[in-house]
Image 1 (cartoon, rainbow, N blue to C red):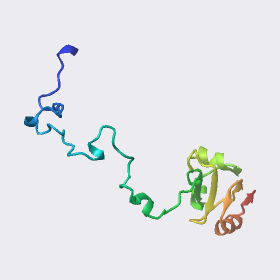
Image 2: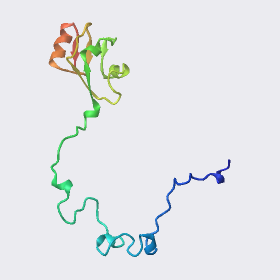
Image 3: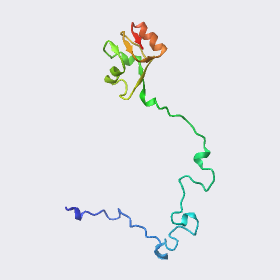
Image 4: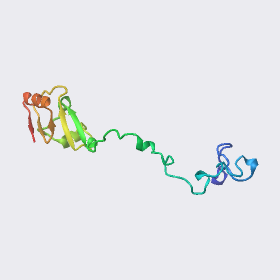
Length: 144
């Protein structure tokens, strides 16, 4: 087999439509563009969403929703996920190394879900009220 012998399968490639080549082609005379008007002219088109001067749909509908810019950088950790971690102090880099939070996370908050068995020391991590009480009850501390 040679590169010059390779050809597409029969029927896989349609022939190019030749417009303006007589009435037998079904696209003769006006080339399928109808009679006159902006769409029949060369270069006569308009921007996407233009509705002839009527207020466009994308401007008629109200703006809805909100996308947080910091959502991708924020992470939540359950109390039960902290049980498996070993070490004196737990900070964001420790959580990233243990694959508890994503690598791009910059802000972390521990939420009250589950229980904690051993005392831990959290450094630079936010904590909910319920999680704080459980950590302190287990003998742990939270450093700012």
